Length: 330
Ligand code: BYC
Image (cartoon, rainbow, N blue to C red; front, side, top):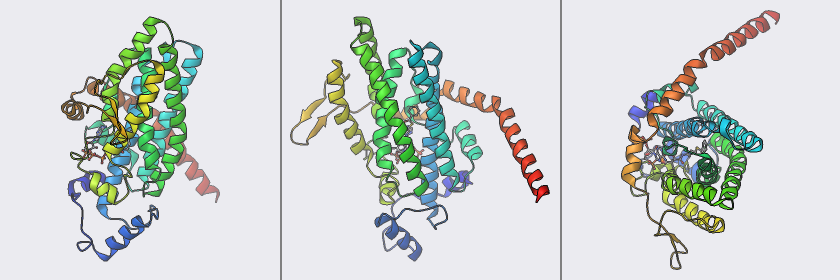
């Protein structure tokens, strides 16, 4: 169903005059901050945009388990292992809330997962970078979850009710994720010279990929204008990226480490930090499937899906048996 919708999705903003009466009423509800619920009428493109964004978001949560899950068996202490295990389980839960929110739009989870596996849906570019050592796990929690929260706090006010409510819950868990990441990196920054070096190295490799998580610049963003008019997105890619930089600079200063960008400096005129853009060519290459880990991530996800078939079949058989015996008893 969704595969068909994306083929017909229209691009470009409709003027008030171009809208039908129904579309004008819909836009009016959005403008008055009234949430849109699953049974409400909505334009097909609004539905398709939400399915794309929520689906991509759900896939990111699930694929995002891989780089961190890789370190559960190698966590340096029992406490760190328990924390990481809980975090990775939380990501599965986030995926579940989001797939459930997407299902309220009439698309099945199987279809979304099928599209991901065929390479027709995306997941966040950040998860195509490797986690090479323990310091990377701290940096992921601090920078990657930190970037995700900034985006998701804004999305709590998104116009689609089920997405907005999923975000409220996810944000609560994400703040624990970011804090545990900062705590792990802080231990290393204030640890031995070798630990400090590892922490710096992780930040050097993950800083620019973390900036890319907010998407292309506003000038290059294809969907922002319409998504902001529909309040699917509340803040633009560049606004959120700037917020992340402003939030992170004092945190890195406290750690006594550096961001790998000599261009970062406070600007009195704008009231924000200036910073260097990531390499956008690299970003678009990663999106095309040419990042360091794209192939591994998809191979691992497809394998996990295939290996989990017997569990899904068992659950379906149990549910149908239960439904039959319930019907017979009535
Ligand atoms: N990566 O017009 P634009 C987490 C695509 S997971 C990949 O600006 P939009 C975590 C975009 O899809 C948190 N693709 O798009 C989990 C579009 O391509 P298509 C994940 C990207 O949608 C586990 C094209 O580029 N968070 O925290 O208006 C462990 C043009 O872009 C990316 C979310 O998903 C990217 N970074 O804005 C640890 C938040 N950026 O579809 C942590 C929800 C752009 O036309 N999503 N593209 O082929 C959003 O807020 C928005 O979708 C974005 C992009 C800001 C990401």
